[in-house]
Amino acid sequence: MKTGSPFRGWMLGLLLSAGAAAFAIDAHAGDAKDAPAAGAKDDGKGEASERFRAGVQFYKDHDYEAALVAFKRAYELDPNYRVLFNLGQASQELNDYASALKAFREYLEEGGAEIDKARRAKVDGFIAALTPKVGTITVTTSVPGAEISVDDAPVGTSPLDAPIIVNAGRRKFGATLKGYTPASRVEEIAGKDEIEVTLDLVAIETNTGPAKPDPRPPAPVVVADTTPVAAWVAFSLTAATGITAGIMGGLAIAARGSLDDELATYPGDGAAITSAGSKVKTFAITTDVLTGLAAAGAVTTLVLFLVAPGAPEDASKPDEAPKPETSFFVGPTGVLFQGTF
Image (cartoon, rainbow, N blue to C red; front, top):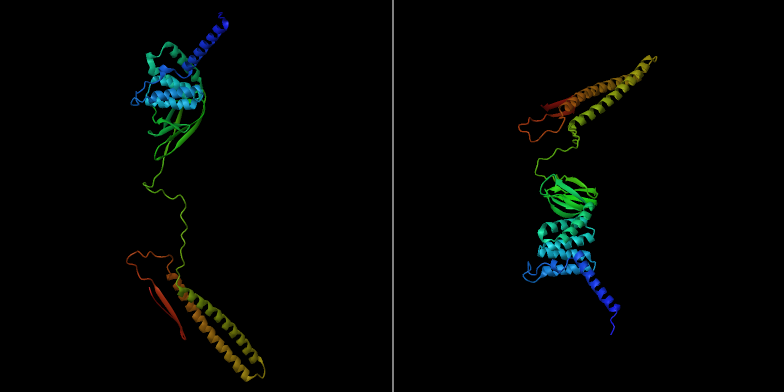
């Protein structure tokens, strides 16, 4: 029976396929020897190893986000440096260059002499390719103890032990601390940038301290009119009396003119002369009386206005002197004024 080249070609293809698959696992998602030892931190249940292998499968299926989560869980259960290589690979596929660079650097540091030359050279190549894609940021805060975040993800508490590695692009830096207003700042980060970002936190004011003066101008003081009613009554009566006196004076002058006319008439009417003279006398006496009353009222009004308080007194002041009291009466013979001062 003749065995020709088809059989040898099939075998060669099978071997090449197997080798390619093995290389893919080694280059991108680790291999069986990278799996954490079963029972390291999971009471013999092998959970860390299972998480790792699940991450490898997710990676092969190109579900890099699920692979990253699985690798993180495996590393939390068993901090085996070998898992850091897989974390770096998954982060790199998700374009999270800062996380990938951090994982690869930790991988070389923790693995040390256990990492063979070929793997070390490969990781060094990854680091060289990632470095131009990140920036190194030194973040400081005006108050220590503040929680620092990058793109709203916490990265530590100030003061930080080392600068932060961030992806190139537009990054938001924030700081929060109880009793202070949050601080934030947005920066455009270019690859290989090394800059400092300072976040100033301002203390929130409380009501425990002394009250601050009111910046508003004081309201105008409105002084109420405290003039006694008697003063206004006296003023009104005085004004009315003065007006009446003026009218009576005018009538007296008119009556005097009529009397002069009667006296100038010849032979003259005795009854008309007597009547005109009587009117002149009556109007004159009335005018004199009203004028006196108006003068007395004016004096009384002036006194009442002078003794009236100009502003309200403080009722809480002790030993106050009695306030002046005044009164007046109008009688047939004049105005009677009395008061206490």
